[in-house]
Image (cartoon, rainbow, N blue to C red):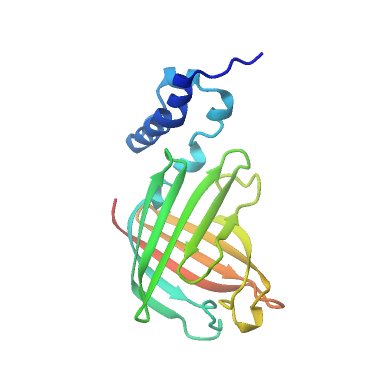
Length: 216
């Protein structure tokens, strides 16, 4: 028969342990003190940050973004891309090192650009997952890797959304497959490509973002 958790232990699990995990991750140490880890129930241990999360560490920090818009925001892939070097991104660990929060903002063609996202690794599904919100769509964009794909390179995640016209007027109201690829070159450089597959067409590059580190 399982023994109910005491209020003290539950408080340690829900509040103290995640903070310890985040601190330890920043210092390169273990996820939590050994004595505390021994007291954690198995269901909680399975949700602790692990190697899949640690592999995302090169993405954390402050970045200058070379941003290109190709087949997106109603543009044709045949059009010359809109390009901006006035976009910046800040990423930090949240929720005890379980997710990276990404805030990207700047200007493109004189207009404001803003997006926020959360990137994580599902220990149970062994895949990366990515959710974003932005100042263009009223839809949350959700991408997931193949179940069991693990710490793959490049990171490849797929999703689908009901288009309001960002993939072109012919796509309004239709379900559009999308895919995000993250290429990590080194600790100071990486690229994120977003692809759409418009109805009846092949996959096209929607946006490309090339990141150069400005700081930690």
